[in-house]
Length: 136
Image (tube, rainbow, N blue to C red):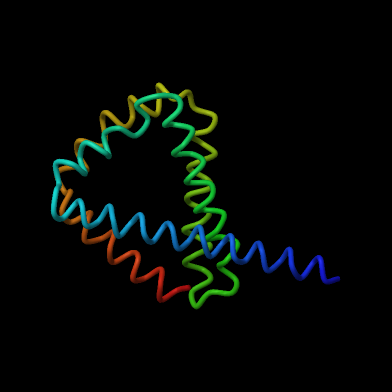
């Protein structure tokens, strides 16, 4: 019984750590988008630029999506966190079965369109962290 409790506590700490790191990443990315948009644009264009980065992105999305989904029942807004987690996990599953070159082609077409809104995306990223903190 004690082993189960300790394992459960360890999992909760891991989930909290993933969510905390996600918040820190989004604050950093949001700040860079607001202050140094060209640097942020370069970073965002690097996604899916190689098979390795494709897999790193997928792993990050799975960890974050899984953490949000697993934490959702004990959060202030379980439906919102469940949906966010499922969206990340579902899109990651799709990307997992798509060759990284397809992901790269998609990114090359869509990211430049999104980059027209680098500063607003930065503000939204920071607001998302605040909302995540409220939901947590």
